[in-house]
Length: 108
Image (cartoon, rainbow, N blue to C red; front, side, top):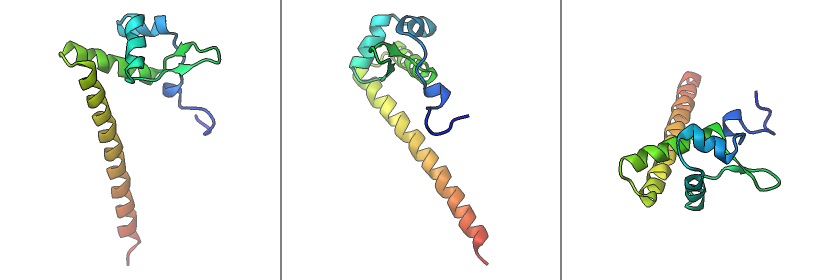
């Protein structure tokens, strides 16, 4: 349960870079490279240590899948942005349909 002051658990960075790399089957330097290319942004401790969340791990798996398909890092960045935009638009569509349904039920 979130209270607004803490991020959802899947957004909270808890895994160090070596554990995250092992969980997704990538090398730690690759994770640093993907971060430097803007493909993900792990949390940081006050001391600057990277902390990866469940969502970061899912994103790293998607990156690895796209790399295996032959997509370069620039293409991956574009694909990930398009996926995020698609998710945002889908959620917005659901929200608008719900509002429309409520408005229709409210009519005489």
